[in-house]
Every structure is written in C-alpha cells, then in structure tokens.
Amino acid sequence: MPDVAVSAPAVPASEPAVAEPPLRLDHQAVRRLLPHRYPMLLVDRVESLEPGVAIEAIKCVSGNEPFFVGHFPDYPIMPGVLIVDALAQAAGIMLRARPVSAPVPVEAEARPARPGVLAAIPKMRFLRPVVPGDQVVLRARLVRTFGSTHRVAVEALAAGQRAAVGELVLSS
Amino acid sequence: MSSIEVTDVKSGLKQLIVDRLNLDVDPASIGDEDPLFANPEEAGQGGLALDSVEALEIVVGIEERWGVVIQDDSMANEFYSIESLSGLVCRLLSEAENAPEALSA
Image 1 (cartoon, rainbow over the protein chains, first blue to last red):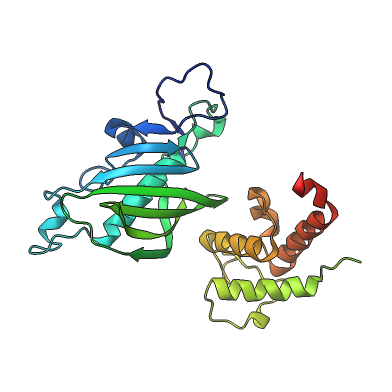
Image 2 (image 1 turned 90 degrees about the vertical axis):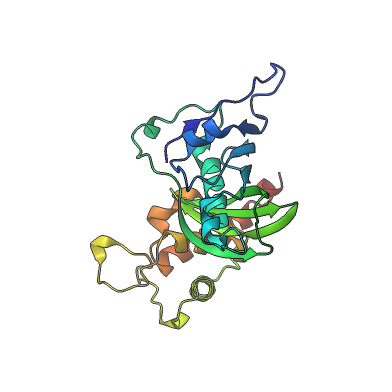
C-alpha cells in the first residue's frame, strides 16, 4: 500500500530521532489516509498513532447516523459489522502511515493506491451495544505481518467499557 | 546428535495446519511434496490450495509451537510444501540450538 506521510507536531530538538512521539491526526489528515467517505468513513480523528505498530482513534456516534434509521427504528444500536469496519479503518491508518522521519521508499510511487482491505475476521466478540451519544475508542495493534497480510488485535470501547474485542486480518 | 527429528516436524506441521485452519482432512493424507498454496499456474494440480491469510495463520502456529521466528521473506521459497516448510523449521531450530548465546545477548 502507498506510504502516506503524516505531519507530526513540532518535536523538541532534544528528542532522539528513533523515538517519535505518538501522532495525533485531525479529520482532514484521516481523510488523506483513508479512501472512505460518507456514510462509510467511520474514523473521526486519531488520538495516538505509532505507524505500523499501534493506533488509538475516535468515532463519535451521533443519533443522526444514517444506519440508525433502520437499525433499529425503536432501538438504535450501531451494527456490529460497522464497529468492525471502524476498527479495520483505524488499523488501515496504522498500516498506511509511515514515521515522519522514515524515507519514502522508491517502490511506494509504483504501488497502487489501495487501502488495507479486510481479509479475515478470525475472532470477534461484541460485549455491549454502541448507542447514540457514545464516543467509541478504536484501538488496534499489529500482531504479525507476513508478506502483504497483517494480523491486528483490536478493541472498541464505549463509555470506557469494551464494546467489541477481537482480531482482524488485513491485506495490503 | 541433533534432537530435531524431521519426521516429527512433518507430522507436527500437518497436524498444526489441519487444526489451525479447521480443515476437514486427515493430516496423514497430506503428502510431503503436495503444494500447499493456491497457484494460478498450477490450477487443478491438487494440494490444499491455501491462501495468504492461511499462510499467516501457519506462520503464527509454527512460531508458537516451536518458538522460532520466521522472516518475512520466507514466503516465496519455503512456503511451498510440507517438505520445504519442515526444512525451514528444522533450520530455524538448529540455528537456535547452535546459537543460544546470541538469543540471550
């Protein structure tokens, strides 16, 4: 997948180059890293990003979400598969972003602009519903990469409690 | 003198693949030389026709079972058959056996 540099806040000169601080990304930066758009862009902003290692992102769930129209009219809960996709999107940002200090690989230019796509959902449990007003914390951590296949441990928190936890496999 | 028995590794690999991928086959029915992975150029030649997601599952399984680390570039050459995979596992095990200092250093 193409590497997209993300802009980091100014780093004090004393900071060692090897230990970049976790990055924060606003919504515009998220849109540069993900091809998703309304109504499928399910990451609002990134609170903490270590490219290729881990990410913590936020999805704010409003009562106006389009999926609440039908899921369900009298009992609005966020579809579990959309929680999974929000986690996959966060993981995609984590995989696509490269450290600011890293050089741009030559082959990056030649690679197709393809996001990490879900290849498998080996494990997933839904522990509590996500409802209008929830700020969902999306966490993903890279477990293992082999070739262009990446296994990622994920969890989603709502109101400080686990709403979903599992593992995803993304293909790049 | 090596404690690594290739036949044990082979049968262990077959069992691991069947268990972790929930395959409905008898581990003993997998031939040592059977191609494990899907290859468009060899379509119809039998084998398990596994994909990249299943390859990753096997990598994790091997690493957990034998405590070795498989490099990311092993895919092309050594992820072909039970024969080639067992060679990889035995090589990694003997490297770990012969260089215990390097691991703790």
